[in-house]
Structures are given as structure tokens and as C-alpha cells.
Length: 391
Ligand code: NIG
Ligand code: FE
Image 1 (cartoon, rainbow, N blue to C red):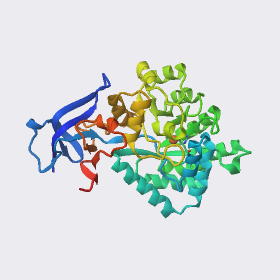
Image 2: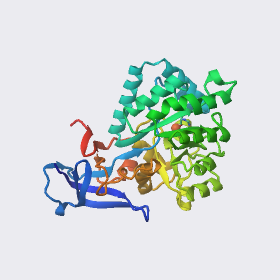
Image 3: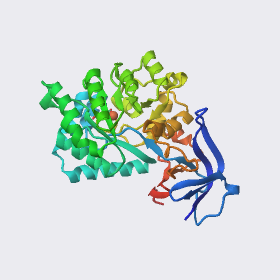
Image 4: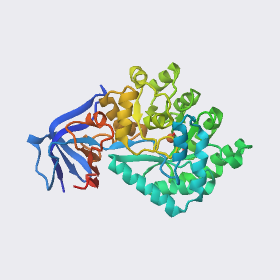
């Protein structure tokens, strides 16, 4: 059953691997067959199909690939945000508030919250997302966090190394051993990735190294939270382990940028985190000038970035991190896919999954040009709608 999307005012097909520029077709059509893109081209040449969707001149972009989120948690931290906006600074310690709420929550509560956030993501045009554990921080709660995450995505990350929980405050080596041993063994069957928050107030480079090595031995693939709160050894570690992605990258030295540019590790920037913690934004021009690969993600979590809106992140990235609109869209689609080492998503070339978003706008630039306005009319995964705006 071929499905033809016709009368597309502007189609973003993907990102050129040579120039990094977006490939656009005006007055386009796209055919989906068996969940994948079977044909793209000019509307005038569109082939016959069994089913039709008239896009009526609107814009179609590839579904966003959100390569960094923390969706399994209970409670919220609005009070912490309020205090921050009155001058209190962000610290990794706030994570413990969410750990207490998550441990106390039933499976049903956690699953309900998780599914609501996945729906929000679909409404925001996200069609592939990664999500992490990291608010359980004991064997049972980390294992249930990754098991719940695996119900909604294949991109599940074990983040037992988020912070050291209070009960291990005086014996952090024991907590590192627990993560690398029993906790990893319990989480690995549901996880694809291992992550460590390597930063001030979380884990140092030696601890992070030990945890990443244990994860890789257990068959997981490495990624890292690095340089959010200060420049440290996180980027060096990321490159040494061939991490798919080093995330945050708020504080980067010239050497960090050189290392990233010479590696296969994507630098994932998280504008929501700088926004919500009132931190300085990193300047993406430094990364682009060096030739590093760049992704943008929501970092949706209750502490530092409680948003599922990729459009919001794009607008901030353009306004405050100096992405061009094209670079920002590429970073949230193909860039996110690269940060998850995926080639089947992040673009709408023939053979890629038909994950696409219909925008109520004449061009993709409106995503950043009209901040705070919900432009997503419909989101499709494998050619099927997962969200359609009520008429
Ligand atoms: O990616 N940086 C570490 N972890 C999260 C924040 C978690 C929290 O504050 O609850 C982040 O920003
Ligand atoms: Fe994070």
C-alpha cells in the first residue's frame, strides 16, 4: 500500500554529507511504502499511489531525533526552578529530589508519566528519542527505570552514574563498584547505552572511566554527560572511548574542540539546560568552524530542562548559540541520528524510515522565526500518524 504525500510546499529531504547544507525541494511529493520512503521528487512527477495525503502547501521535515532525554521520573522541581530564577545556582545535587520521588512512585505512576511525555514528544515532532535511567540509583529502581524505558524506545541508556546517592555519600567507591557490578548486570538486558555524568558534583574522570569500561564489557555502547558545569576531562574521555556523543559541552577548551573534530564523537548541545539553569550558552560556531559533528537535543528532565519542545530548543540554539536555522534543523535531525549512530532516521531519503512532520508554515525557518508558536500539524512514524492536530 503506497501512500503519497503531495502538494508539499517545502520538503526538507536531509542534510548533505559533503556540505552539511539542508537539501530542500519546493513543490514536492513523497511516497511511503512499507514504512520507508520509496520516492521523493517534484509534485509534478509524483507516481500513482493507493492512498493520498494532501499537504496543502505546508512544510514537511524529517521527524526530530532527540538523542538526549531523561523521561523516567516522578515529581517535579518547579520550586527549584523558581529559586534559581531568583538567583540560586544550579547544582547536580538537585537530582536527589527526583530520586526520592522516583523511588517512592509505583510502576503505574512512572509508566503514566513516561507515556505522557512520549505523547508530548510526538506533538512536538520528535519521532525517535533516547531516554535514560538515573533517578533510581539503586539496583531495583535503576532496573525498573530501564525496563520501563524499553517499553517506549529502543534507545535506552543506563545512567546509574548520575550522582552518588545520599546513602553512599561517605563511600563513593562502593557506589561505583555497585554500578559497575550488580546494577549494570540488572540494567544491561534492557539497555543499549551506558552513560556517566562526568562533572563537578557528580563523577570524576577516573570513576567515569571505570564505569564506561564496565558498561562496554557488558555489551553496552558508551555516551557521556560532559562539561556542563565546568571544563574537565570529560571530552578527552569521550573521545578515548569513542563515545557516540558527548553531551552538554557548555564549557569547551580549544583542545576539547580539536579532539571532538578529530573524532567520531558528536558534540550534543542542550539549549534547554542553559536556558533553565540560566547558564552561559556555548557558541556553536567554534564547533562548526573546527568541523565537529553537532547535535541538538531537548535533555528533557525535571531539573535542568523540563521541555519536550524541540522547536523551543531550535529557537534558542539559533538566537543564543549562533546556529544558522539550517544548522539547527540538521543538528536536531541528522545530527541526533549520528549521536545515536543511526542512519535509518534523521532524513527523508529513499530507504530511510518515513518519520516526518507536517508544519503549518511555508518554510522550516518558521520553527525559529516564530518562537513559542506550535507549528506541528501532524507527526508520522513509518508513514502512520502518531499525532494530528484537532481541527
Ligand atoms: O542532563 N546533567 C545531568 N543530568 C541532567 C539534569 C538532571 C537533573 O537536574 O535532574 C542534565 O541536565
Ligand atoms: Fe542529561
